[in-house]
Amino acid sequence: MILNIAMDGPVGAGKSSIASAVAKALGILHLDTGAMYRALGLTAIRRGVDLADEQAVTALCHTLHIAVAHGEMGQRTIVDGDDVTDYIRTPEVSMAASTVARYAGVRQEMVAVQRRLAQETPMLLDGRDICAYVLPDAPVKIYLTASAEERARRRWLELQQKGDASTYEEVLADLKARDEQDMNRAVTPLRPAEDAVIVDSTALDFDQVVQAILNIVKEKHHE
Image 1: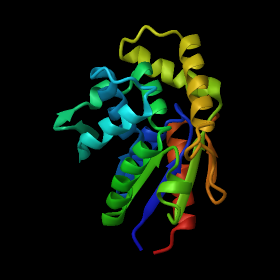
Image 2: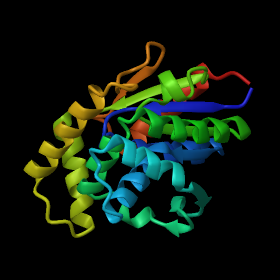
Image 3: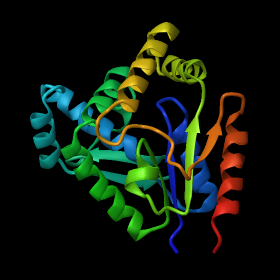
Image 4: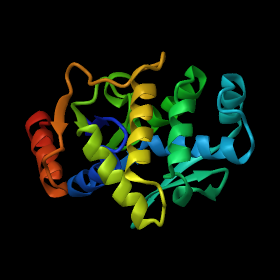
């Protein structure tokens, strides 16, 4: 059986970096599904598409070719041949991603691609609805979380390193707004799957989280 690992969790939980490290340790690919929604949100902003217009955003999604490539620097997210990886981690794009991800037509389009990729090769997928919706039969399911304050602190430090002038209070407010939107959307709201193992990283460092997840994989997946 192909080893597919499904990982969900709220914004700022460190899913992308943790997932990359876990996948590398296991020798499998990592697919950051959130980056796909971020790419759509960024493109909508750049093209002046009203993010509140579900029909317009869904139509835009159907016209784009959103792809991912994997290399030594990890996943690169590409829209119509343009690498947008370095532009999709701003607070504005984060909120845009959360908005467009509410739309059923958008999720249907994205999930079809994600499922196809997972069927082709062993990989770890992280996002908001991977465990319950995208890969409900995955042998290993993880819900990675941390307190809102700790997630905001980590995101704020990350933005500071990139030269972003956002304050901690602004980042915390944005994060809580994103949580509210993700957890209360009509289509596949964010919540732990019944059979997912919850990993709370609030009091753990990076290596401890990675090791905890590797231990879960070893316990859950039997060759």
